[in-house]
Image (cartoon, rainbow, N blue to C red; front, side):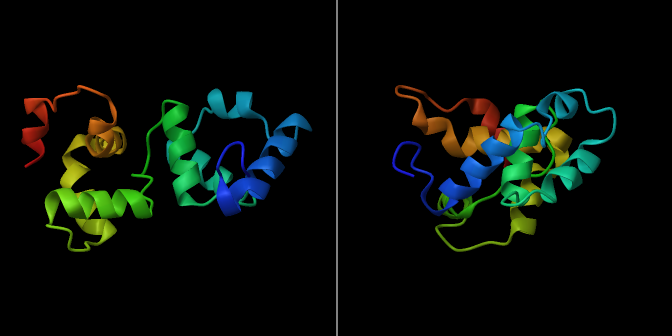
Length: 130
């Protein structure tokens, strides 16, 4: 809990790691998954502690972005940047990135975290998202 700062999720992360170590979860199988990203997402969601946010982030790590992987910080940051801090629905956020297809998942993350890099100046390319 203290080392990785996972808070209440720490026991779930530890259990997931144990399941991988015991061979109950085969990450190589996920990496070579022949089906759709949505099918793989559904398989991930049956695991204890894996909800949409976790599954959608794991899909990104596997090179199969699917879903925006929105959490409370991302929702708040999106609202701050684009709606004067007013809360918006996930559907509103998804609509902004829909034209990017599966890459919307990567775009939302890059846009909302772009100032995490010291000295980074947002590219004018972000203006295409309106």
